[in-house]
Amino acid sequence: MGKKKSKAIVFSGVRQIELREVTLKPVSSTDVMVETWWSSISTGTEKMALNGLIPSPPFIFPFIPGYETVGRIVQAGDHVNQGLIGKFAYVAGSFGYEDVNAAFGGASQFIVCPVESITVLDGLDNPQCGIALPLGATALHIVDLGEVKGKNVLVLGQGAVGILAAELSKLMGAHLVAVTEPHQNRLNISTADIRVNPDLQDVSAALAGYEFDVLIDSTGIMSAIETGLRFVKFHGKVIFGGYYQRMNIDYSQAFEKELTFIATRQWAKGDLQRVRELIAAGKLKASKIFTHTCTVDDDLMDAYSQAFSDPDCLKMIIHWKPIESNNDADCSVTGKKGH
Image (cartoon, rainbow, N blue to C red; front, side):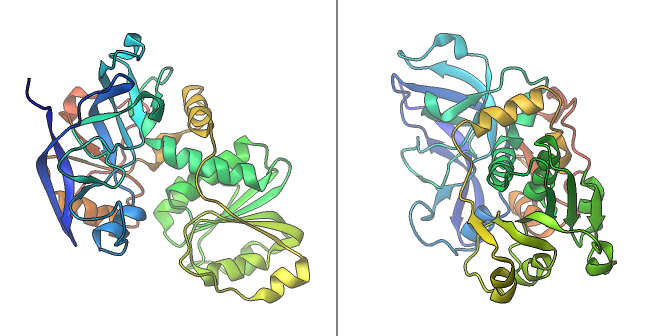
């Protein structure tokens, strides 16, 4: 029996993307094989990797990107519960390839990975919503570290993580949630109590009279963080929710208010399952971040470029099967790919 082949999205060089055939590793006794239905594009890590800005393993060209994948389990190893076959699952990526590197490795038509690395999507009316699990879990971890119950929370930036952090802050019992975001379409999606566009409004005037216990940054912009610190109360808490090459902010605010700064890495154990349950219960409307869609047979460079550069594109969903065969109820996108 020949080795299983799969088509996959491959970053073959700086700003070079191909859809090519790759070879899967055999399914071991503790592995599953998943047939991908949807994957998505990370606008942070994958943008840096495609531009050659992460020249270290596992980002050595050529490599398969992708850590936001949902598909159906089609095969299970001998030591795996065979009842999983046919179920939808979220896959955080895979190293299960023989002839190409995997930088997460989830952007493949078929994926072989250990069963413990998947999250089964039982309970979701539409499994496509599982695409939101990693960003939802990231936002949930940020909110957990902020200990937001009963607190006033200010979220800087309403990208996908910022939008989910604002919504989860309310779900976790925050008293008041305010957000700042210069792109109006993102602000319109947000469910925060107070929404401020710093390009159109004076932030100091809009937030006058408010003091915040918790500041969550989802911008990575030092000037935005410095402005936000002015509204944090004495002994307040600042959560860095992005990835920062360098920190460069005025120390005086931190000194005068004895602020606590917390860096977040990723989600904690169990957070993916918690987000799945919140979506299944209808408490977290994860689909609001699904703004654009394309198919794996479209111009992939065009799709990735739009995901990286279009501020209205919060999350580009890549369909690996014909779109008309998918049930988009409760996870429909609000926009299509294209300029």
